Length: 376
Image 1 (tube, rainbow, N blue to C red):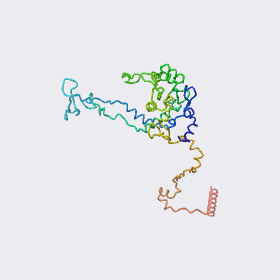
Image 2: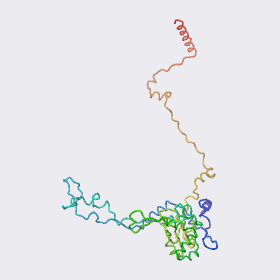
Image 3: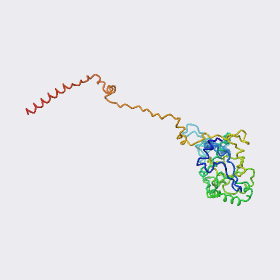
Image 4: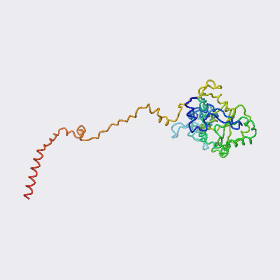
C-alpha cells in the first residue's frame, strides 16, 4: 500500500475511528489486536458498486411472460373494405354482443398485448470478474467507515469500534439464540436489531398476497470463517444475515447498491482477509494474480492540493483576460456619419474665423445695438 496514501488516510479526521493500524478483538481476554487488512484501504467507487449490483441483481429473476395464445383464442376475420368500419379482425356469428367486436389487436378489448412478453428474453447479465472484485473490495472498505455505516441507517453508536471483530473463543460458546442476543447487547449492537424490528410493516402492493406480506430493514451481516457453529444461534434474530468470508457477495455487502453495511466479523474471518485479497503490492493467495486496485488519487482533498505551496510555486501568474471595447456609434466617426447621411461628404466644411475677425464682428454688433436703442 502506498506510503503517501496510508499517511493521509490515518491522519484524516473522518478515518480516526476506522482506518488505523490495529483493530481490537472483542472478548479476547488478552487485549489482542489484529493488523487492519489492506482490503479496507481499497478505493471506494460508488459508480462501480452500483453498476455491478444492478447487473448481479438481475441474475435471480425467474422468466415470466404471457400465454402464447392469449388474445388469439377466438375466430375472427376482417370484414374488409366498403362497409365503413375499420379493417380490424372482427368476431363472427350473431345473437350476442361479442359478434362483430374487434379482436386480436392490442387496441381491442380482449385482444393480445403489444409485443407479447416471452420467457426466452435475456434475463441474466454477465459481469467481469475483475469488476465484481473491485465492487466487493469497495464495499468492504466502506464498511470500515463509521460515517458511511451511520449514513446507511445502522445504529452503531454504542459499539466500541468499526470494524467490529469478535473473538473465536467467545463465538464458540454461543449455541442458543438467547446467548447471541446477550452477545449483541454486550457489544452494543442490539440497538440495530431493535431498529429492524421497529421497521417491520406490511408490504405495499400486490406482493402482500403472494407469500411476501411483510418487509423490514436489514440489520448486521455476520461474516464467519472456518467455524460456523454459532450461525444457528443468530439465524432467528430479525435482520441478521450470514456470509462466509470465502464467498462474500456484493448483494449482501451493499444491499440496494448502498455502501456502508454494518458487518460483525469473526476473528478467523477477519484474519483471512489479507490472504484472500492481498494488497496493492502483494498478490492474493487465493485469487490467482489478483492485487487490490489503486486509488485514482492518493489524496482526494482537492482544495488542499490547489492551495498547497508546492502547486502554487509552479503555476504561472494569472493572465487577466483582454476584453475588446465596443465602439459606440457616433457622428464624430466619419464612416458612420456617411452611412447615416451620404450627402455629408459633399458639404463644404466651415472655416473657423480668426480672433481679429471675431472681435471686429463683435464691435459691429455692439454699434448696431446702440443705434437701435437710441432710435427707440
